[in-house]
Image (cartoon, rainbow, N blue to C red; front, top):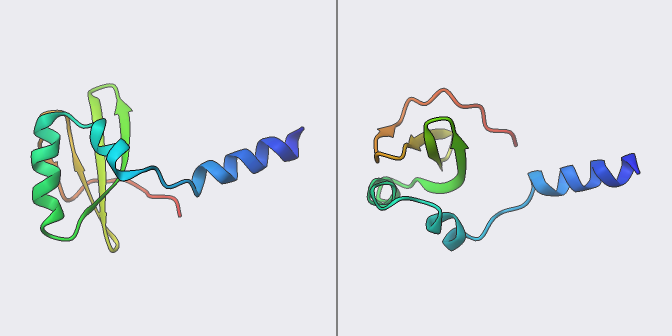
Length: 83
């Protein structure tokens, strides 16, 4: 049973969600901000729910940017991305 649980955990880490499904999770203000980051090469990677609302995590090479519920962009986010 433990082997099955480990296999499922590993599959979740390598799962790439459909981009349109991720965009659907964003607020309209987040979509505007994320679109502006797209112009600089950032791609929407994850959407996480935090105590302060949803947080969009965007990646460009080794750079990380976040967009909060209000559409505020943080290009110096202190987030560790697992690979």
